[in-house]
Image (tube, rainbow, N blue to C red; front, side):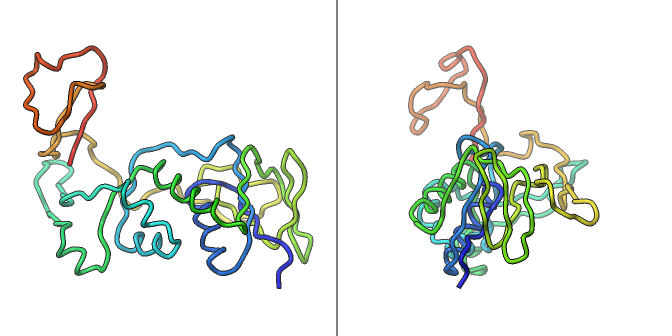
Length: 227
């Protein structure tokens, strides 16, 4: 039986999800996050049927489902003309065909759910303010160095992101691709037929209200809502 835990450099979505997967297979892990708290930046994430299955495997989907949003459809448009090329309905028939639903969720909500689940396992140790600065392969184990000291582990998993600084001592062949498989041609609101803009702040309940421009005009930025 292994005597050392798996060490994970990076406490983002990938790092914490890896720790949950390891504990499902009877392996202890230590997660080292350089920030002072487990938090993430960015916007929403698409959670397709395969991702839902993975989150169920990690025993976290039931917690996350309440924070996820069910869009009615996916619209694929020509990047130059805006012409609709394909509409994929995401209702009951989609879920029946693929076995799981399609959802979107904010990155922060996803990470929070993963961290809360990880804290329920005594075999997962979460450390913040602990950047992995360097490591060394000792043959039968790996040793990492943080500002608070050295830790031994059976293996080191790098999960600090494609823009992360891999700790000194790593060997890497070739360049890491930072390109997505597609790029958005336009992030405007023209294709969102069911979107509206509301001033930031409370103007009363959204449901059951009809707005006139002068009734809810306040200083400050506007927020876009879609459903």
